[in-house]
Image 1 (cartoon, helix red, strand yellow):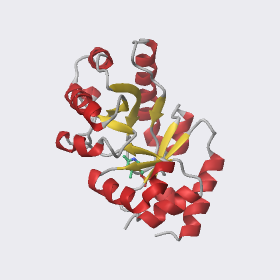
Image 2 (cartoon, helix red, strand yellow; image 1 turned 90 degrees about the vertical axis):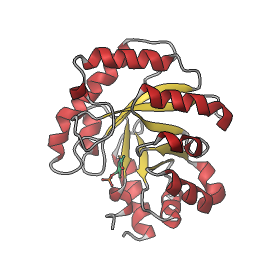
Image 3 (cartoon, protein in one colour; image 1 turned 135 degrees about the vertical axis):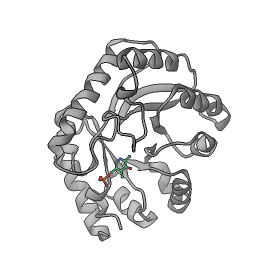
Amino acid sequence: MGSFADIRANYQRIRREVPDSVTIVLAAKTRTAEEIQAAIEAGATHIGENYVQEATAIQAQLGKMADQVQWHMIGHLQTNKINKALPLFDVIQTVDSIQKAQAIDKRAESAGKDCIPVYLEVNIGSETSKHGISPGEHESFQSYLENLVQEMSQLSHVRLEGLMTMGPLFGDPEESRPYFQQTKALFDMIKSLSIPGVEMKYLSMGMTHSYQVAIEEGANMIRIGSGVFGDRE
Ligand SMILES: *Cc1c(COP(=O)(O)O)cnc(C)c1O
């Protein structure tokens, strides 16, 4: 647990360290409203939450302050939680199938969202323990991805704006580099398709232990938890 002063100092140090073009999403799972408030007061602009229930409670506690920042869903989103998630989040980073995208599309309008930006979550290492679309599960991942993106571009209340990946959770950040390179290549491939209705703007990869490598490999959005808030219990 860091003190509020530590949270402020950590956020501002990382904000100064990374280029202005890189968006920092603070991964706020398990953190209290007071800790998140300290980060917002220090200048944080984007908050990531993993669970709908936690996001509901935190936003209620933050009150008006919650409106100062963008909220990103960075955890696995179950279809039966989409209705509750939509009013809470500005961006859903964890779309992992056309069915999920369609389910969001179907519910967005009635939740008062004309169009919600989403990213595709790529399980770049095809690890069974992780969510996201896995290259290893498809004969030709490139054509699978092209089809998926084409189908998503048909949805009027969902707009694909990026890719998100986790990569290895621990260890030497150099071990993450090839995964980040592969994700960047997929990002560029989708971008080069120039599909109307798809606007590839954000490559969300890199966490506390790996964000420097992620930025070197083209991330323009990083998700930082323990590096700002301190170690999780
Ligand atoms: C917790 C989390 C992070 C941040 O992890 P840290 O190692 O604490 O920086 C990033 N992305 C997701 C999806 C997370 O759940």
